Image 1 (cartoon, one colour):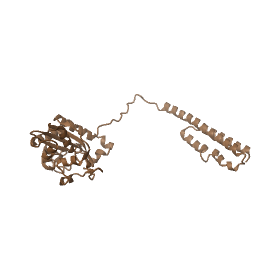
Image 2 (cartoon, one colour):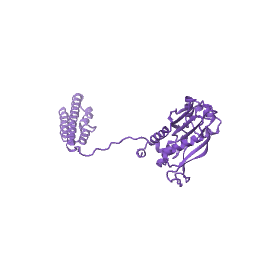
Image 3 (cartoon, rainbow, N blue to C red):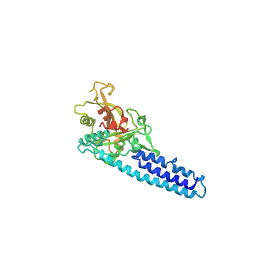
Length: 346
């Protein structure tokens, strides 16, 4: 192959490429042209592969000219690309006009999580009854979570809580909000207390439709002189009427908690069947909403109050349980799955 033939071939490659580029009208055509004229198998790229076959004295001139052709094609592609995109934009502006008389699209709005809604309602109910909202820490010591609540290390009641322990001895994730009782009492003694303590609790349990490893609780605490079980009953009944309606029926059943004596559990009449019995209430006609009782003298003493002078009551409820009962939610895992199909119903 002579020098003249090589340079003629390069010139022909350039002219054919520029002519084909003029016919391109859209982005797809530009991509196809790039593959055909600048891809690995393109004629100009094949010219580089033929350099070793040329005489040594021709290689520099041919390599330089091949680079010039390649750069010219790349520059032409960039220029043509701008022209094609500009033409496409003008076409869209001419054909895709906005009708300003059409109604606008309703923007999506955020909303409160169902758990937040129930918590706020619980706060409002207890604030109406003169209770203050306090916060306590999620990471607790064994002393506050168990010992000061009348649950020493040897006590079999510890089996009631499946505990998350940390790598630091004696430090754990609280299993209930009851440790907050000690914090509030020690900060308030000897003044009377009416407080609620909402917060997250953690238990190493098998996850199911009714059990989660983390969940909210709301602790209710009242301490003062001459507080009786009748005050406890009146408070929880007042909460139930404000929360579920004035005609709601309630009952207290004897139970056991290490930090209260006597202890009870409170039920409300099933919302689904009206007390007749159904699968939701397991045929009993009643639904449990909280545990409660008079504060144990040991717990009062650990909180800084003389049980000979002061008395008090405590209660603990699960907002998720209340949400499930009110809205007939069948699986507690829905609350933390962040599934918009569930959350947008509230």
